[in-house]
Image (tube, rainbow, N blue to C red; front, side, top):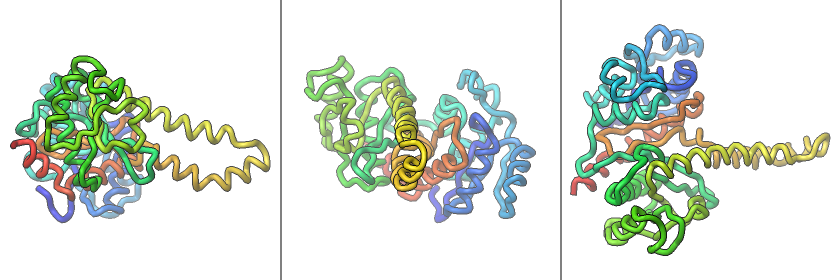
Length: 335
């Protein structure tokens, strides 16, 4: 249900420090973006956080009973807690009362709830978590999927990931013919394990894709690919490594500046550059990863997300809604 003003169901109880930063992110998003946020969770805690924020405008609250804890097994917990915050978020989308879900809680529970409540897209066997990475080319990013939903994959799954990633890249990133790469240990089509070799053959034959061949690790951030596919085991390691490297690079640059007056002058000169660098490599700039392959828009954010990251995650959901990504996926995958 896409409307002129998107309605985002936000799991207020999901996150390492919830609900305070989640609520703050909702306030920021609703004041800066053309969206209405529905806060799902404990009304008393949410209201207290809104009061601390000095909120005067109305933000809808939907009461929930508890949340899925990080140490709980997703499926059993979702069944034991039908009114948990993430379950009710998905229910709002299913019933057409919200256009998207954003959660920084248990990622496995978010994915399981999406599958149980919303269902898979027709023609898609496994959903994938798609994350946006920066590249060395300014204003150009690469979409990596899967980054954690499926640790074991079949070639057909990766082919479906490629199709979904291409659609997202085309309609949200504005890339006319997204170049798809297969993450592998070499450029030659004969390289890699059985999964990589078989997937390469499928991607090469798929006329709906612009397949650019294998992408080695050094190619991921090169800007030569718009979409790169891999299994969730490798993708999740890649994601967390990239997040760590981004913070380390900024910290090392700061530490290498000279001490004293020279350092202060140098820092003042480099401050705008360092800020832009941080923006390019900071995962919080994108807010979260899109769960592709389910009958709804779902953004999965990092558990440590602050208000800035949550607001950006809500914006990512809005972009997917405004660009009708779900409709384009439905049209292409059911063929």
